[in-house]
Image: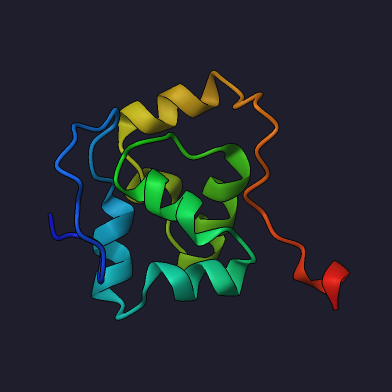
Length: 103
C-alpha cells in the first residue's frame, strides 16, 4: 500500500497497520490536509489513524465515509473498526475543529 502524500513513516510498528483510507485518498488525488480542512478535523488525527497508530473514533468514521462516499469497511481495517466500536478514547482529546466558532 502506498504511503500518505508528503509524509515519511517513522519506521515504528503501528497498532493497526496502514489503513485503506490512505490508498483511497491518494487515488482521488487528495491530501490528508485537504480532507481534514473540508471536514473540520485535525489533520494530525487523520495522519495517526491512517498510518494505524490510533483507531478511528465513530465520528471520524462517519465523516470520512460520508465525504468519500464509501462504507467504513472500505476505509479501515477490520482490526481498527473492531477496536473503536468497542472502546471510547476517553482521554478528552477533541480532533474535530469548529472553525465557525472562531470566525
